[in-house]
Length: 211
Image (cartoon, rainbow, N blue to C red; front, top):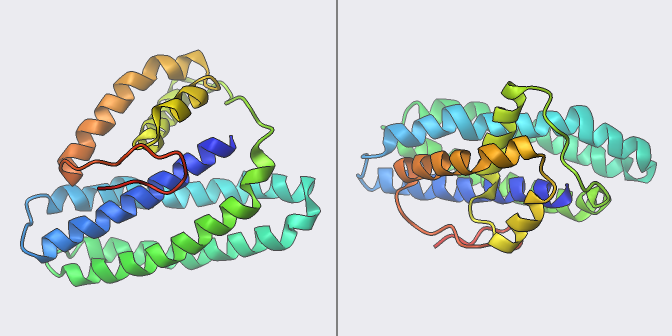
């Protein structure tokens, strides 16, 4: 479960880097993927980041706090950082709606990356070690949940080294394993439409290898 959390952190770092590059291209006059980039922000990235933080605040962090009371100050700081990130997501909504003035999105992304880099590193150092005992991902309760989870895994797995993914797949229930190849293919196709064709590497850490 610690590895799964770090995979999601990798994906957040990976995609904000891709947003920054895409906005730079728009600012330079290449608007060919502006609509796709705007859609990726509206329907994917900002929702995934807000949802990730909501789940942490409502389930993961209270559980950590109850099992490890000594981590209460750490958890409180992480939740405070979540509240600092939320306004930037709202600013991002307005900025991506107005990509005719890409400097607005550029400023939001720069500020968001700074906060995220600090937040994710702090969480990885202080929370991730306490998730290493959990070795199995629960079976989704229904088809809808299975589809949501498998799409999340397809998103978070892109750019992760194959041998790491092999270990993660050992933890997944059969219903997710069966759906995963199609979900990954669909996400790869979406990535091409949004970002174009450049390598996202083969990372073994939460830090992406984008070239």
